[in-house]
Amino acid sequence: MPAGPVGREGGVSGLGRPNTPLSSATHGSYQRKALMALSAALEVGPSHAYLFRGPRGAGKRELARAFAAEILAGAAEDAEDARRRALLDPSPHPDLVWLAPKGAQHMVEEVRERVIRAAAYRPYEGGKRVFVVEAAEAMRDESQNALLKTLEEPPAFVHLILLSSEPEALLETIASRCQPIDFAPLPAEAIEAMLREDAPDAEADELAAAARLSAGDVGLARLLLTDQGRALREQAVAREWGAMLKNAEAAGEEAESATREALEEEKEAGMKRSARDIGDAAKRAGRRRRTELLELGLRLAAAWFRDLAAVACGAADVAYNRDRLDRLRGAADGLDASAARRAAELVADTRRRLDLNVSEELALEALSFRLAAVLS
Image 1 (cartoon, rainbow, N blue to C red):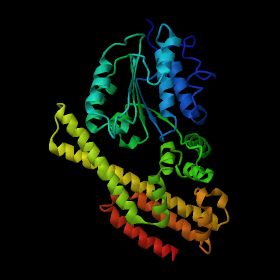
Image 2: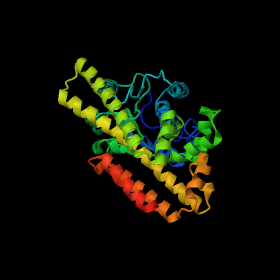
Image 3: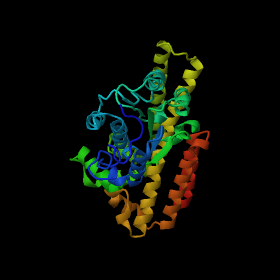
Image 4: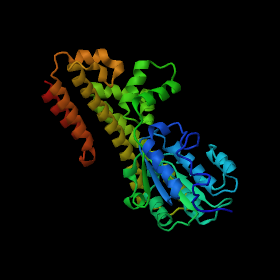
């Protein structure tokens, strides 16, 4: 059975051409840099490990499946059949292992069994095995440390692809051993088109606003169209920091509880865990979720002040909050555009410093005083 990289006469050398799974991927036209890097990798022989990093919804999952299919096809006797089965979702190909978290985090034992230990076994067919880990940042440190040896000394037939929208949450030792493939945020027009398919009856202006406020993150755009997202937008516009903090704390408590429950289940299944380890991990998950929502709320507030400055300058056409133009015009009436820009800077600075503040409540209280002074 053929193994190893396929040359120019092989089944994977034409990925730069049209009508191949990789080049015809839905997001391919928006991710030309990633597409070129993956096509080049298949030409010379793929590396043992990749880190696909970029916003949610940018096409990482789709291109990872197409890339994995080409790796498997290139080492198979029947390339077309191997490619066809690998592209199915879920895939029946025995040499494609796809791991996605079932909850807030990957289960440690599942990572060990389905990736780390499974990587030691030779391919069932063909000459390659591909392991894809979605939301790699959801692996706990224990899983990442266990995966490190596989990344350092992988069998020649193994290729690992980690997908992450939060690569900073990965251990440096993991990220440094993977070849990075960067995915750019999708343009607002592309996200708006996706949202229109999801919610054909939604107001066009709200879809446009969600797409622009998402900064290229489809998952965030979809969140903004939910009741929770709409409430968060209103809190950001009205500067209701107390309500924003209360909702973030509730979400953090929910994440902490879910993480604690998952870890307790692992302990009951035989994993060695101390009560302290479980408590610490649960608290980290809760704080992370709380901070995520606070950061999002502050991003939305900064975008509102940015739009106020634009409207005050007569440039309402570039506003992100397309569904609230009348409200923006009313708030911008008589407002100095430079004051609105300064307010946006203050909000952005508070968001950047959230991790450094002992108390989010004090940080938001200080922001209120600063904004009052700037906008008075």
